[in-house]
Image 1 (cartoon, rainbow, N blue to C red):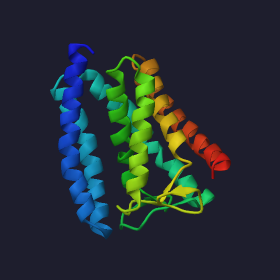
Image 2: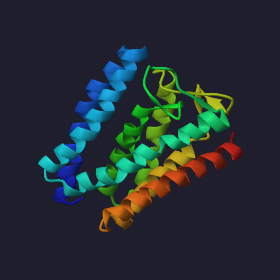
Image 3: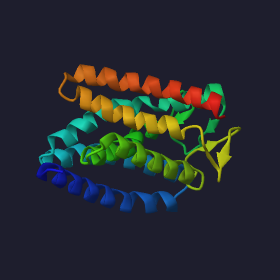
Length: 218
């Protein structure tokens, strides 16, 4: 790891430790419409603070990765919309927040990036980034899936579950993170239009991977 990467990793770890030290206790101590408002605030705060701090600390690639992942994060709830409306395998409790297609709370557009950015950035500081991003994303999404029900964020239904969380999304989520890192490495020096289209294409890939995983694992 070179000096720039080491500084970037350190700053990223500090930023996320501070952010989640505030966000997680608040999310755990609130419910109903108050939780919905809190999640909207945290989604916006994260996506404002992360690029600003990246710019302030001189981490140009930190900012660039966020800019690449943002349209992906915004598009990914469309896959959840499919699971709610067409597959019937997912439901979101009503927290009084506007929903995409009447199905997925809009704050999820700003939540996906919170995990994807972290695992991609940390993986890039290692010698085997794709193995690391696979491991980190699998572990991270496993924690998310496990914590979603007690935090009343979403509930899986009518699918294979272990301890209350669904199994079928885990492999597609891991492939999503691997794909995000690969696309970033491929497109980071290309015009932003190509990065934007690549991010949207990855969201479509993820929806297809979810569908196949649901078919094969259920």
